[in-house]
Length: 158
Image (cartoon, helix red, strand yellow):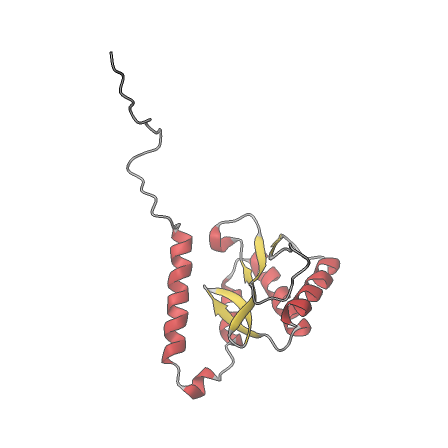
């Protein structure tokens, strides 16, 4: 008697389809597309305008816990690396050198996470030997945390 193998059945609902992106990720991509469209529509004169007000407006929309962290990160970046330009990146506050993002803040609420994130791109000069951190979970900031972040931002921007 020959046995045929049947595929295993899953217990998850077949009504739910996973297309690879969460609603939050799709929302962030839509925000990024809007940012790029807005940048493309700006005249050369408007492109020179300071986008810091957009970043501060986005921070002001955040829930209180995230807003407090984002405001402190913004202040630390401005003090530690004044040459980094604030901009929105996927709807998040980010700081760039020559138009390329060096670091960014991601609110916990953005992706329904239990902590906010301070992240660094590959443009950040944080290289240490063969391995280094590129993102940090934030729940609150102490004076020591702020000093460490300031040093990281300064190093990343140089």
